[in-house]
Length: 249
Length: 309
Ligand SMILES: Cc1cc2nc3c(=O)[nH]c(=O)nc-3n(C[C@H](O)[C@H](O)[C@H](O)COP(=O)(O)OP(=O)(O)OC[C@H]3O[C@@H](n4cnc5c(N)ncnc54)[C@H](O)[C@@H]3O)c2cc1C
Ligand SMILES: Nc1ncnc2c1ncn2[C@@H]1O[C@H](COP(=O)(O)O)[C@@H](O)[C@H]1O
Image 1 (spheres, protein in one colour):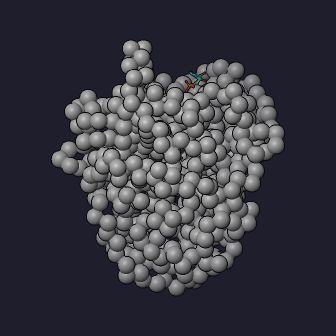
Image 2: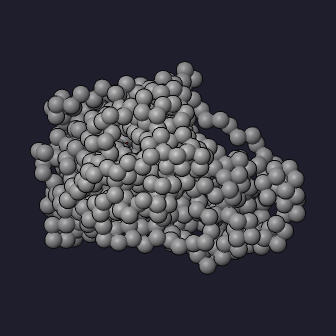
């Protein structure tokens, strides 16, 4: 079974992003970029499926600028067999990305498609679900356990009240939550080997997709600042403030 | 303009997030219909009919919708949704699971987790863990939107008298089935919607130590939350995680205990009215958002606090 993994290049999660002065977006110049953390978990899950002999080939895909090749090379170093970059300078929206991924699914016919539950830049949490709808297949979103057996996947999902388990016919989409696994680090020899693994470059047009955004960003502003508070010395003082000043207890 | 709101419910009753979503629909303006898709969900539909400002309730009662499987519910919503200007769902795990499928089926974008309505086609939403607020405008004919409940004061649960109309459509995609669930049982208020939230982090040390937070919470009538580190370490279940990729809360009072205040945690609680931080490290970033900070050992402070409140 082939496994397709979608990885996004995003601002590293340790960076505190700042809004640009002209309010057109956030400052991306000279900011550290990385693979979206949920995508790291997706790659790790695919690699574990291969180690168990369930996956036969792992294909990593990214839609983005030329330097998203860096994140694809990381995926290759972690254990993906080959990679596809669908190159575009447009900041494509989840629907367009899902359509491109659907094009790749049609070509490659994977048994399982693993995505992150959320990209930590746009915080959309949409792409996997959209891809599953376009492909007309089932989805196990926010996964914390994935078992593939007998042409089916059992996925345990992190939901508001606790955990839910669903069974999906394959092919299916899985989106990863934080507790699914703990991603490994790429070893130096594997980073070297990854440089020789195949990486195809395509365009959205190759899949007949127009990536022009449907939603226009009118402005991007910093959030309302909280006023700096005070430090209290004793618990008595804290309780007094909560009762008489803040009036919340 | 007619707006379709997808109800969040457990068949018997409505979840509070539905009321916040109706409030967002009211801010957009227009006729408001509520869809209750479930199995044996008359109770939830009757409750939806009482919500002030709702003019019609659609009840799709079928075994195919019993567990809110996104594959099935999205087909129903996409079928019904074609005649609406907006389709809204709360940004709960259910809403997030189903609504993007609806958007894809209708070939429109989804706007995730709006925190404010600017106009019928323009909305504010947080991005980058709430470090920026984007104002976005949709040009799609149907606007598919998830609503961040904390952004909108709940609509009144009573005062309305909408008609409940049965929807016959039974959509079973046949791609997925429900196996089981493990739901946390608790007598404490739910995190979303609680007036006071007490959250513990890695500083709690282990799961047993959370008992001091539970006693404090019970005295305050509070819900209990946690940081990712506390959940990952297995101290408490996943549904207690507050943050960018967990639950977003905005109570009257949020007490962060042994939590450092990473941006991903702040994203889930920094709109709380009053924030208290208890941490032994006076440099901890949580103090930069706390109204009242107290530097010290949580194992001394929390029991004292419990005695005094
Ligand atoms: C993709 C991604 C998503 C994430 N999503 C979330 C999310 O949704 N929610 C979330 O919370 N995090 C999230 N995180 C994790 C986040 O970055 C932090 O790692 C996490 O919030 C840290 O948890 P903590 O504050 O409990 O632990 P730590 O950062 O380890 O802080 C523990 C604190 O406890 C204090 N302490 C220790 N002992 C005591 C004591 N006896 N008395 C008083 N104080 C004490 C310490 O001084 C310290 O400040 C995410 C990270 C990533 C990469
Ligand atoms: N540009 C992209 N290229 C490849 N995968 C993507 C891209 N954008 C989103 N994804 C996938 O979809 C997941 C969810 O992203 P989002 O819906 O944007 O929150 C990510 O974790 C990725 O797995």
